[in-house]
Each structure stands twice: as structure tokens, then as C-alpha cells.
Image: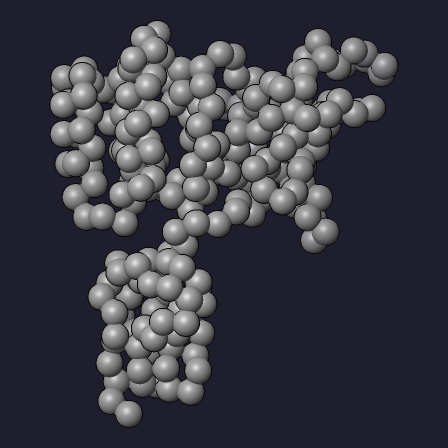
Length: 233
């Protein structure tokens, strides 16, 4: 059998689709070998690096990883801390000792610190093999969020929304004068003094989510923000 790639780089493929033929190509994430063929095991975007073929997922749930910064919502007050929703199949626990540098006495009313429905920017400090997740608020930028609006995006699209070294999210901030925080779990917080600019930031992020696989995204976003009333640069 001749060696041949059957798809283009960055092409969207469906499960079971043949990506390449021949033993010279190597299957990686989201692909598998069947005989001399490499097939897609999920919906995704083809990424060809040399002889390695992998897929970038277009959708999928977040899987908590140690060191990730996430935006999460308090769902339960526990005896010694808080349980939060992480936008994944696994909830996480914030212990009192990781919540604040302030001493919290035993039996204190924990709702004075964080109440059910509050959103927090937190870092995942530990994930056990049983997927028990711990978070901390001790670190730069980690805190409770006040006001603003919450937006859900597909977790695999988060790197595209942030951009290289934060370039894409910085572009939106500059044009809308909004504060924006993007959690690696696909939860985004946006706060602006002008509700129209907040809405423009929401539309921009949704546009990146939909067009993440398209080339020239930064230029398209610059044009979109300028044409829709964003502050000129």
C-alpha cells in the first residue's frame, strides 16, 4: 500500500474517517490504527506534524488538572470549607486553610467568606487518582469575583480564546475596556463599565469559539471589534 495522507491539515473530520494510509504515519491523540490505515476516533481538527497525525477536539468536557486556573461556583457549604462546581464531571473542595490568609475559627459562619452562588477564580492544587479535586485561592489573581457576567465556552477552545501569550484576550480587552478572565475549564468572566462593550466582548469570544479552526483569526477579530464599535487602537 502506498503511503498517503487522505486529509488536509486543519480539516474537520468525523469518527471513523480515514486520515492516512501506510505504516510510515503514526497515530496520536484522537486517532487509531486499523491495519495500514489511521482513522479518526472522534470529531476533531486534523493536526499533522511530520509523520504524526493527531486530532484537536472540537468539543468535550473539561478534565481537571493540577495547576489549572479555573472559574468555579460555590454549590455547598461544608464543615471545613466549600464545595464548588468545576464545569466537569467532578466537583472540587476548597478547604478553609486554602481560602484565605485570615484565620477562620472553628464553627465560624463560612457564608461570610463565600456563599452558595459565588464565583471564584481558583487554582487546582491536587487531583487524586479517584478524581477528588482540591482548589486554592492562595496565589496572584485568585479571588472571589464580584458583578460582571459569566459565559460558558467549549474547554478545548480556551487556548484559542486566550491566544499566544494572551494576545487574543488582550485584543478584546483593549477594544472593549472590559476586565476578562478565562478559566481553563471553559468558564469566562467579563466585567465592563459599559454594558454595550460587555456585550461586544461576549460576541467576540463566541466568534472565536466558532471560528477557532479558521486561519487569520486575529486579523478577523481586529476587524470585527473595530466595525462593531470597539475602541480604536
